[in-house]
Length: 252
Ligand code: XBP
Ligand code: MG
Image (cartoon, rainbow, N blue to C red; front, side, top):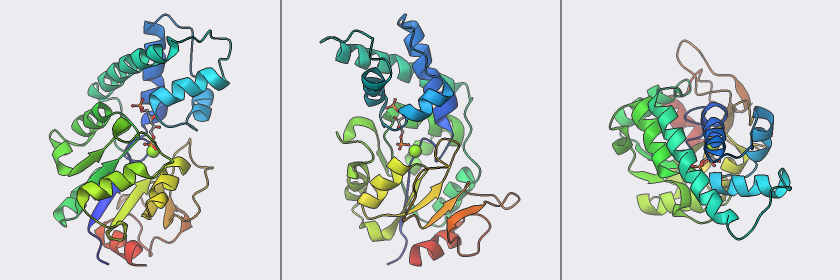
């Protein structure tokens, strides 16, 4: 079957948003609420086991801050903290502090020129996706993606397949006509759960994850003057991802 569409994860795949974006925004929200919670880089790596900001805070209280008194207002506190966190995060992005990863902008432009359809499937809040695309890709670039599947749109977040299944349904495409792009184990579990062939680009937080079943695992998408490293699988002999390379990987 012909390759018709690309479905991208956002956090860790399009940009390294976790350590210098989401983590920082969580800490700013905690400070704003007068809480002494502080998520350093190492702790945040452990907290990434759970996707979704609200779910991650609940996990933190359950596993790492068990002395914090919890009552029937804790769920509301988490919702309020998450709103503040989203405000801090989108402000950070508006300040231009987080660029796209190597090859991302070029590949998206080339895919558009080749007439491939584009979508997003992410666990993060919709406003965060808009802020990243507007500030790091191009003004108006949200419209390049015919489906932006994000956040609480499905109750079961990654590693559940629901968000990818939702995106495929909206695009009215079978999984065999698409390729997914992911950076994490929870992400590839989700895409593979939806039967999608998946290309992985790792980052510092995910380099030791299990990517069994990925078509190819790369250190990044690569540029003509800065080729990627193939960590597992087969990139069909190409030094960087382009549409022809994706077609070869998809058809293999
Ligand atoms: C992204 C996430 C999200 C973000 C925070 O995972 O795990 O939870 O860290 O987003 P993926 P919110 O890249 O697999 O989609 O705070 O907006 O939930
Ligand atoms: Mg990700």
